[in-house]
Image (cartoon, rainbow, N blue to C red; front, side, top):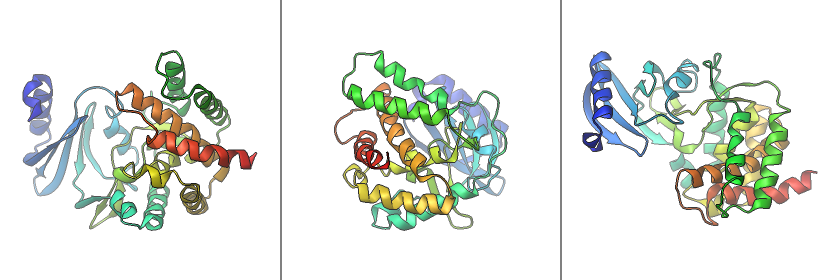
Length: 285
């Protein structure tokens, strides 16, 4: 395991396994975390240990705030680690969308969002306005892959929406097809939240630019329109605000991709979605 080269991470894993009485069956690693699949007594569990502070550092506390409603249940959590119920077979919702069943996947996402009735967020949880700082960081830098006019328009829209929200609540913050898994007993459930406070229309931004494997398909006005029609009707939220959030978040997601060191070209899902939505917004005004 890559943890062999990170003594601190290995120590944290060992400590959590001991304190939470987990017997490991197998391990998987991602860029941001180590996942240990096993059992606590007779209960199948997953221990997720985040490598370093970042977006997922408090994901256990965020997930716990939903109390198992529309999400995987949390058995234990602390900073940088969470012990979860193991979802089986754990198939990501992206498989449905990529298999030509996008309407079905969209309806499932609406059902998951509707089920996620949160309690109060933990103190210090970021707001959607806090996330707007990404626009300023990019504008102050020298990277030129995101057109400045697109960046400025997205920032303007994002700030307008942030200042006119209603019914603010705790949101998942990264609710999309790869973060919704199938469980044979409980159905489709969300995992891996970032946690952000905002209106429900904001929650649709991430799913509109996913699955990322098909940026060409996502960047079709008909696909965006069909998805929003289904989502906003089922969730009874403002379609125009959801569309504007989708545009602004698409550009912000591209900013985050640059900051995280990922390649950025014309096929970037965030930029592709933003360019598709931009003329749709003109027709709304």
